[in-house]
Amino acid sequence: MRDKLAWCAGIKNGIRLVEPNDNLASAYQIKAEEALEAMHSVSSFDWKISTGYYSLYFSLYSLLMKIGIRSENHSCTIEIMRNLLNEYFTPDECDLVETARRARVETQYYVTTTVSEEFSGTLSKRVPRFLVTCKSAVNGLDEKQVQELRKTLMILIDEGRNQP
Image (cartoon, rainbow, N blue to C red; front, top):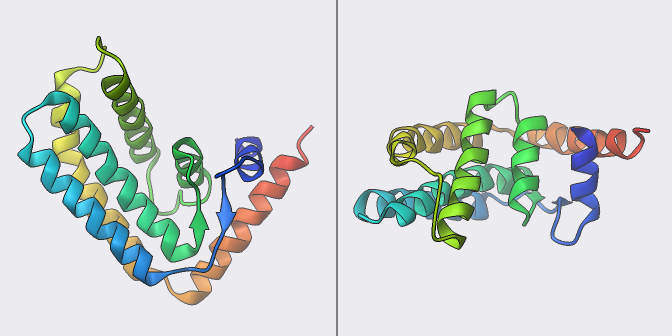
């Protein structure tokens, strides 16, 4: 799906390289932790789904800030996770974030929903582990790895642009 990365790089608020920023990486980790706390404290199913998703998303975004990648399109952010950060995340974790994104949209914008109560429980169990995974990745990256990931992203985007 490198063509999707190329598409994401071409849209407004899509993928952009920015200066890597440890302070923003830390700030997004805090936002992820706050969303996790909110997920455990709210009783509303809809808000559990939303806060669970945002904990996942902010955790992932902290890693992007460490690398210096901006993506304001959530689907594009998940594509970066799938295609660039697959050394850090399993396909199952990528699917979790995408499923949570869809569930958040469905519960936030629609009155009727097909999101199961069981999924709320899944989020409650998996979000804390995901947050730890992201923190470990952020803390484990050195400057050389950051530069390599930035270079690889640009290669993936260029390959996507050159696909027939």
